[in-house]
Image 1 (tube, one colour):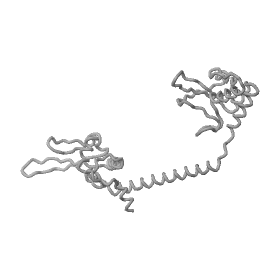
Image 2 (cartoon, rainbow, N blue to C red):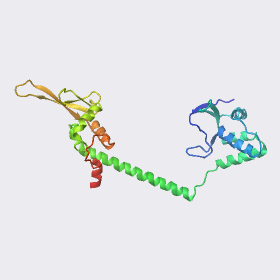
Image 3 (cartoon, rainbow, N blue to C red):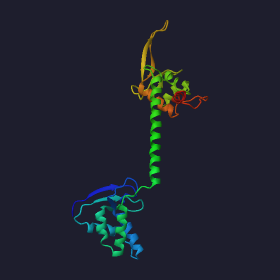
Image 4 (cartoon, rainbow, N blue to C red):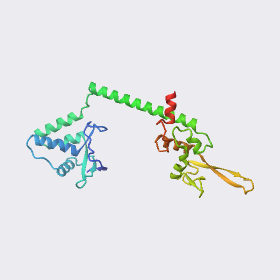
Length: 266
């Protein structure tokens, strides 16, 4: 027997029926589907049905020496079943073992499945409608992305703090953003009595960095002060969180995002 290849498919149905359904081949059919055709014809002409295992063995015997592929369907209620992926010629060859009436019925159905289906006027209208819907959806996405990029270019400047950046986002409660970023491990509070944010290791050099400068208070020892600063990637991430509605917002927010207001003004 010629070498066969084995492929595994996990969906409940892996059959391809000569042009039936979406994304299927017009050249192959599973032995399970061929068996459905055979048993339907047998029932029509008063003959007993063939069990799946017996039919698989019959296919292997008939195709001894032929090249074919196999696949496995994993059943939820029983053991996995192995089947053959058959070409149209294989199906016709295996059908020859049936009685004349059954054979004629099966061959007729195989031939019918092999014929390309002509699209009706309604099919063409539906295809045109779906194509237009996809085009409009793509246009909306492109315009939204362009607006988002434009807003980001106007909002973000190098050296900005998270507070300065969020002041440009319509509706954001700027006073709560620091605590929000602390909750997301971007910042941590190094003060025990107040708020003195530092950049946490999670966000350092990824979303944020720190600017430092020396402070010299009158009559006291100088010390170094750290200011958390947004990096561009951090600004983009904050803006995405803003558009997703995850930033802390004011109770008086009008429901519009910054880019929405820019679009309406335009």
